[in-house]
Length: 345
Image (cartoon, rainbow, N blue to C red):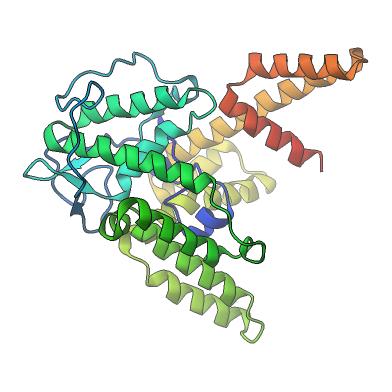
């Protein structure tokens, strides 16, 4: 079974603001992106909130912005995306116009996870090819225009700096992002693309404030936080559940194994509480996590062996990098370094 890969950009904002992402799309493993003609707000891969038609300026037809559907020129996915299913979707209204929603950005972000592994030009070309496979006519041109807007936004976002006294304030960062988004997309488009995420961010910031309020008891804090979460749109609540379920399931599985439960016991329990499909996907996440840990451990052993027989520091660094290049993609290498840095503390 294959699972989706995504940036935790659209999960619950507690995860979005304060933790890494990547697991929020696990529940979409069996979904296929919606094709042209999907008009419902609940098209496969799309959100359950209201949608809006995109209003972008006319796009000049160029070689890369062809509005006829065609097969992707890329025969294989980037190495780090092999074995994964594409996340997100393009949805088209009855008149052939693109319908706006956060699922479009999930489609873009799926390919942006290969940054460092592939050039920016290649990533853009892959996304344009994905657009042409899923839409034609005005919708394809509008999606291509939106992609270039998103590229410009991402560049500005990477350079976004806050005053030193606001760097640790999630509310200040959210407000700065909201301002930047409306600069690039306009009010209506920004609301359609980022509105749910921004509402989640506001709820997360307020929940953090509540949990630090010493005038409230623990029960009062939890009650207020629950009321806040209940105010989120349905799509946002579902995204939160999707983003946090793997973490909660993992914690429950660890507790069961600590008491002597087997993998079969864990699977049976998940089937009883979550259903077969969810249990299968969680089992695959467990297998992927175990495989990743095994790769890290194998690299660690080889690196330690190199350190033991290499006296020169420069020679060791060169050998270590060569080992990294043989064992991991550029994208994976960042994870490896972060993992090893954390384990050394």
